[in-house]
Length: 205
Length: 205
DNA sequence: GTCTATAGTCTGATAGAC
DNA sequence: GTCTATCAGACTATAGAC
Image 1: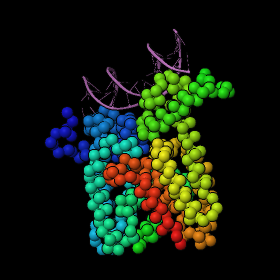
Image 2: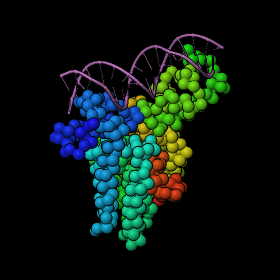
Image 3: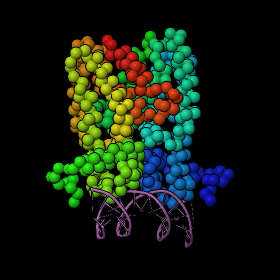
Image 4: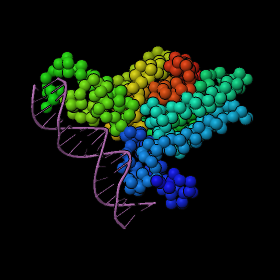
């Protein structure tokens, strides 16, 4: 049995190897999806042998599962940080900024999610129906309140959140296409000011 | 050699079977990507035997290639239809409508594209750099002209086009997530009026 | 044109030496 | 903990009967 499963505290090497494997898996799964990825690719990318990969994880699915679970935690943090604190419009613009920064700094994570959703979210369907829906409903209610108070323009809160997701994640998920069209221009710098303009106009009453 | 490769005109049965295969392949490829899909799945979905599939096409890659090539043609039609003819703002809103309709009526096609781009567009990279970029540049110039004439608000034309793509395709590509969050609400009907509001506000000078 | 049978390859996972 | 060797199953594709 792998030591990982015991209660013993993992050694420095173990933590480092697990991290190497998860990083390699992120690279491969985000590009090919769960079914399209192979353990060989992950092993090569991680610089470890295939059996060694399976010493640390109980199989291909376990790696994917671990990756997705750990990611789900941090992926929604920017939305959780959206609170009633100061100027609502500035709050929402900050949220857009945080999401765009995640697309820029963690494009593989974004693509991993995109792949999972695209395939019907077989593994995280429950989290979507439960945790995600609850969080979005909560924040939508907050936005609705701001609208009622006349602090931002009237607009459907749920679809507003979808807009922020789709517009920011597009620059990570469709990176190849964006760069093909823009040529030498720098996508993320431009997107920053573009999206600020867009949402300012949209949210101003 | 398969008759398909000869110059003989394909029979009614052949055309029907090719169509069945391509439709089944669209279903499978759009969900699992090229590498994640299997001929078995496609054959089952098409109601044909695996060898029979390979009688009509020269292999898995040939099916995928045919599918993507045929799709590329029609996928950009809505953008091609964007011309200087009447009210610019109405023209752009019509474009949004047409794109949203494609997401609603051809979600599998949208997801097939998303999968291909997500994986780095190995097969259509050339088309992105050539045909797509040329078309987008052309339409961006048209939009820039409208801005110069003061008919729509000043905004980066390339990113405006990206916005239309991402906002409309989101409802097809992330359908599972959208429905999970919205519950019983109807995504596409709501998106129609939401996006009309959004782009009207964005484009009004 | 369509089938069964199967070749040849790839993939996830295990055994066992060190 | 890490390796080589290897198995069983799944996969693409072909051969050949009908």
